[in-house]
Every structure is written in C-alpha cells, then in structure tokens.
Amino acid sequence: MGSKPDTAQAAPQQDETLLKIRGLCIEGQADDSWMDIVKGLDITLHRGEVLGLIGESGAGKSTVGLAAMGYARPGCRISGGSIRFKGIDLASASEEERRVLRGVRIAYVAQSAAGSFNPAHKLIDQFTEIPIKHGIHDRATALADAIDLYGRLQLPEPEIIGFRYPHQVSGGQLQRAMTAMALSCRPDLIIFDEPTTALDVTTQIEVLVTIRDIVSQFTAAAIYITHDLAVVAQMADRIMVLRYGELVEEAQTQRMVSAPQQDYTKTLWAVRSFRKSAAITANNEQPLIEVDHVTAAYGALTVLHDISFVIRAGQTVAVVGESGSGKSTAARVITGLLPPVAGQVLVNASPLPGDYRRRTREQLRHAQMIYQMADTAVNPKQRIRDIIGRPLQFYLGMTGVQKENRICELLDLIEMDPDTFIDRYPGELSGGQKQRVCIARALAAEPEFIICDEVTSALDQIVAEGILKLLDRLQRELNLAYLFITHDLATVRAIADDVIVMLQGRIVEQGPREEIFSPPHHEYTELLLSSVPEMDPNWLDQLIKNRNNTGGMRSVSTS
Image (cartoon, rainbow, N blue to C red; front, side, top):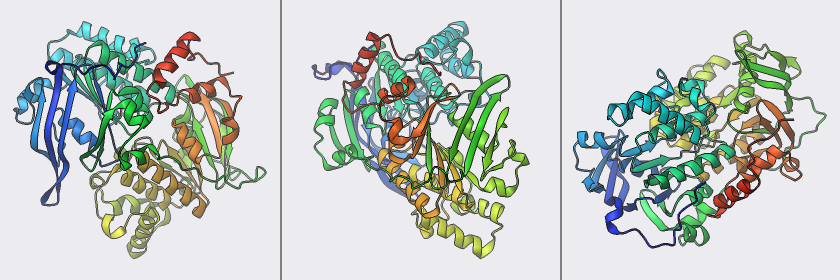
C-alpha cells in the first residue's frame, strides 16, 4: 500500500500549482444584512499535495472547501478575492464554465452521504451518470470502473452492492460509495469534507489508505477537511488551522503536530480529556432494559445472533464494532422498529411487544433516541419550539402555557437561551446546537432510557466534548440510562460504564470499561484498539507495515 509523500522534500515548481486562492472573502446573510464568515484567506495547492483544514464548528472549513469549486451555499456569497483552478478564476467564471469543471475536474465528497444521494436511484446509476454524461466512459466501462473502485474501497460484494438503493446499505458503506462516485472521472482536485466521519476505525484505515493511494496514483490534489486531528496527521502534507474564517496557523504536518505555535492550536490538540465518573450501580439491581437472547433478521438474512445484555438505571453501556456488526440493528429491535425472530426485550422485567405499533404510548415514551445526523433528524421547516413541543403534547398532553414553559425549561437544561433560540429554524443553528435540540426533544418525553446513535461523530472535538459533558450531567441529574452506539473508542473511554463489542451480529466480548480496555483482549477488540489513529504522522504507515508483515488482521473469528 502507498505511503504519505515526504513532506520535507522541496516544494513543486510554480507551474505545478493546481489551485491558487488569494484574498478569499465570503459573506453570509443574517436577516437583511451580510456578515463576513471567511476573511481574506490565501491557499496554494500543488499536484499530489494534500492540504488539511481543521478548526472547530463554524470556523469556515466546509465553506472554504466549497469555495474551491467556485460554489457558495445558499445564504452565502463570494464577495472578494480570486480562486484560480488551472488558470481559470472560478470566482469570476460563468456558471456554465464552473458546471463543466464540477464533478469532472473538481470533485466533492460530502460529510453526510445519506443526505447527498438520490434515494430513488441505485448507487451504480448515480456513479455512472457523470462519466457517461461528459463522454468520459460508455456505460459498460463506467460499470466496470464502479466495481473496481467499490473493491478498492473495501465495499462488500463490489459486483453487487452498486445495484442497491441508498437505504439498503449502511452509513459507512454509503460514505465509501460516495467517495467512489467522486473518483469516477479521475478529478484533478478532490475536496474531502469529513469523508470518514461515518466509518468505524477498521474501515477508516482502509479508506484512508485508498484515498491516499488514489491521490498519489492520479497525481491529484486534495483538500481534506476534518475535526479528527489524528486522521489529518496521517493524510495531510500541510495543515491550516482556521477560526472564525481566518487563518490561525499553517505549517507542514510534522511541525504542526509536534510543535504548534498558537494558543488556539494547542487548545485543539488538548481536547477530549473528559472522563465521566463511574456509575454507582449494583450488579444485583433490577435491570432497566434487558435484551434476552435476541435473534433478528432482514428477510432471510439473520443479522443478530442470540445476543443478550442488560442496562441498569443511571448506567451507560457502549456498543462498539465495525459497520454491519449489528449495533444499530440492536437499537432497532429495542425500539420496536425491527421485531426479533427469537428472544425478547424487557423493560423493568416486563416484556415489550416486538413491534412498536403494538406498544402503548407509555411504553414508547420510556425509550427515546438521539440520532447521528442532526441535520436529517429535524424538520427544517419547523421552529425549535415545534420540534421540542411535539413530544410534550404527544406523550404528556401538554398544551398552551404549560407546554411553552416546559420548552423553555428544556432549552435551559441543554444550555441554550430560550429567548435566543426558541423561534429559530434548524438552518440557523450550528451542528452542535442542532444536536442539543435533538437531546431536548428526547428529554421532552421524560424517558428513563435513551439510545444515543453516533451522536458526536459529526461534531468537531470541542463541540463533541461539550455534548458528552451535557449528556453526563443530564444522566446524573435525571438518573437516565444510555445505550451509546459509537465507533469512536475515545468516546467509549470518556463516557461508558460497560462496553459491548460486536462482530457480524454477535457479541464477542462485554464487561466493565476498564476490563475491556485492559489486556488480554479478544482478537477483534485488539484489532479495534490498534486501529485508533494516533497523532504521530507516521502511525498509519507503520500500522500498514506491521499488518503486512503479519499477514493482515482483517480475518477475525466470532467464536
């Protein structure tokens, strides 16, 4: 497998410059006025080079990435500067000139694959559309190329998976399919906007290696936007740190990682230090939730195999495992969205009907869910008061002043000022604020138990730490139980009391957090732990070398 180019070598000559941005200014609309969100940014990018853009939510990373295509999202405008791609100024080019380049010479891999694919068309048809439309491939060649790229990106059954619809594959698989689609025309410049956010650590390794190899193989350039500092250390030759639309610091990766100069950069490097205190829960206490020998299937395909675990009041149980291991399927069984083939789910020792439609409103109320992508989990046409107010009315019968007061109390509980936020729409909130609204919506039902499905994976590390602290405080104040589904082992270390490790629909290991993270490990747990990126820029190359020397570690027994 390929390795990262030597960043110490001499910079490419000027005629190899692919992207040159000077004095980029972007404004965003606020009511009837415009405000600066990117303030005079300069970027130079050469062929074969990967530039990392990092910074907390609202820093302008994605806005800059889109601007590299000459695009400003609705409510924004490029107000100054030049964006020269291979000599063409995209800031002043016509829309037709930009359209010819986008998707062909410049490609974009979005963070939310679920929100980027057309749900009415198969993956393969969406892959082949652009190369066929632009005369790069005929359909047969485009189909063969799709299968080749699906295989390179470690998608299962690459000859078949493209003929599924987006909803028929996992989030991680969908993200890889979108990466393949962006590569279909072999672009010169690729903007990767959090491309591995939805991936488990083992799959992330394979995708990162593939992205790096493709950038090198096709002598492309890439802008890699991420909030994961350890990932950007593996991918980028050079890193730019942004805050409030301005450059804070720029340096070669090795120097940036080992000796950041600015206080803000040092703060980014120091986040995710939070660790919850262990829950005081007696093992002989009656379980709140009990999953008892559950087997579940989608049609003829069995996806959960005789799994059992318990969750007690005030406790956080984390479920980890790679994409397709059964984590989210277990949550679907608990919530009644997928009736089990065998076994049952009990709440306070009382069996729940397998189908949510047969559960009483009170049974539904006690178990709520917070979803991974807050963008797609809330109705963009509803105000915050309506989003939080709906469960108050549905579950508790609240109306009028009583409902209004409770909405304000819930906003206070999630540390969002009611006077400021109650009448805003989701589009007027940051990612972290939207996730807090989703937490308030779950709390509105006054549940005993909440399923948190990858709730911090789409957030930068500073915002994610704030969400974890909020969930911890709410748990202590309200004695909530959490089932925390995640592929982020740093999050598991921060918030879990007990850990369940799943592989191919089976539980391969479970127990207290400290026990699971202390050797000896099950071989699959060892694989997960060894796949967590480290800040050392040479970590990925060393990992690949070690695994190649030992014949790889992807073949793991579930027994």
